[in-house]
Image 1 (cartoon, one colour):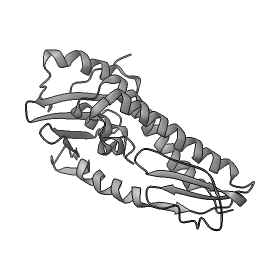
Image 2 (cartoon, rainbow, N blue to C red; image 1 turned 180 degrees about the horizontal axis):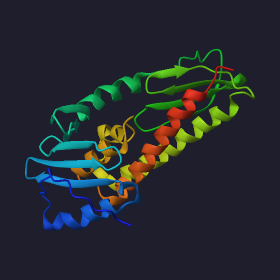
Image 3 (cartoon, helix red, strand yellow; image 1 turned 30 degrees about the vertical axis):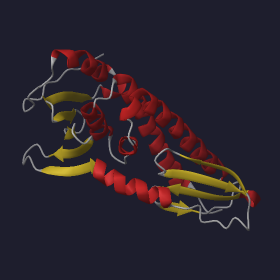
Length: 233
């Protein structure tokens, strides 16, 4: 069932050719509590606003067609003051830092038997002999020894990372050349779904790509959840 609530302050700039694609995005089950509007679309930029019906929050994403950059903000309904949520420039810095993060284990002491990472490098795991693990989550790291107390959470974290990587690969396939590293980082941002779908719609993602992006968003939440539960022993 599709709910259509108009937002009085939004001015629609949806062209005829965009209507069908946009309606497919609106019809996704994950977007039923959102109102999605394209308020500007020209040769320079595309601007999308998303209204979250359950929270009353408004997000605006601006996609620069000249350099493929994006910026997404939250707009206060009363004051109209904008608060930055994320941008492609922010993700570029984060991506470089996360790719440099090491496993922090001496290869001379233990042998690596398994490892995995999502595409952006936000979430990683390394499994060594003697049941030694290194798990990493958005710059944080733990070095547990697997026991009966933490084994379930370690395996769940590993599964979540692998599932996330699979969803990101499917998202990348659906996006094609538009699947930049910054955009892949955006779909796993620690925010609500509203600003993410605003960004994806602004950059021109289709319904199939957005569905896989939502899967990535959920798996990233699972990674954070299980990482938080993992104990050292």
